Image 1 (cartoon, rainbow, N blue to C red):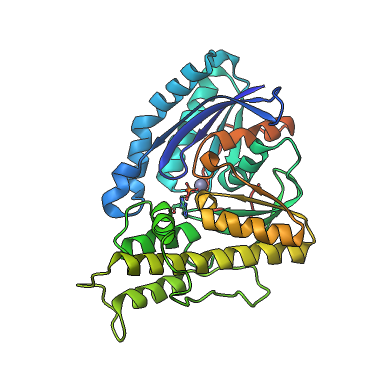
Image 2 (image 1 turned 135 degrees about the vertical axis):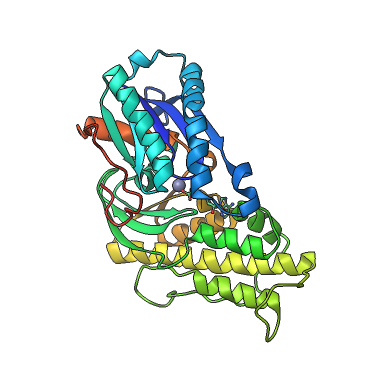
Length: 347
Ligand code: KG4
Ligand code: ZN
């Protein structure tokens, strides 16, 4: 079975052709995969501008599909289905991918499969192992999401908790901007934090002693702002930090985020009695986070699956979850809509 998967939920235009696997080690063979990043377009705004993202998808979607098909060395007629991430994400961006997928389905007379982007981030873990990763706690930590789900299988998930304000990646991006670092902020904060003292500042860790499985990073972000501004001040205007101060602030901030994420993941495991943890999304690329997770899971005798580094940030290969939906007979009609904000009830 061969499926073309499209991903345009945010600011990466991506396509992949995946096949139900014959090769040892992974249940999926990747025949072609292309990701066109828009980072350079959003750089000056230090965040994704939805209008710019949608228009860039319009320009890039057909060349990206074309290159993916070329890589795979197959004809479009050989496809069994076309899959597309239609939730959650930015409206304009989602619409470009969905309309491209529908057009292909119409022209090729192939079935349409809907991909939930959050479920796909977790499915990225399955692409690294032949062992079943479900049932498990699924943690998605990206630029737009910090959520915990109980996954019964690839498709059936129950929302356990998540951020009540900023997502973890969003907090990394905003703190990076305050520290005068580049965009996207996560990799930059992580890089300078390597030389910093994470005990230099004691930043808040919201809800850490409570049973609720939620996150809040906006107080942490404000605390970093006050720390940069200096005693009695709130404005960052005219503040100049030396590299040691930037490194200490970055390390202390990163430690606070990682503590919150790791402790809530472990709490979710304890509360549900599950013994597998799957982690995906851009922030899962963070080295400190991966180390802390590995240590905590080892101590709790929990099997940890973290998405392979190249599949942490947005890509279409994780759309291979469409193979599971194909097998379950879950196809969509051509009046399928986008669902930009759907995070609580993945289908
Ligand atoms: O999953 P993703 O590519 O896009 C969304 O679906 O949002 O995640 C992007 C986010 C950005 O906020 C970026 O700063 C963050 O992931 N990120 C990181 C790292 N690499 C990417 N955050 C912390 N440490 C990293 N190494
Ligand atoms: Zn994502």
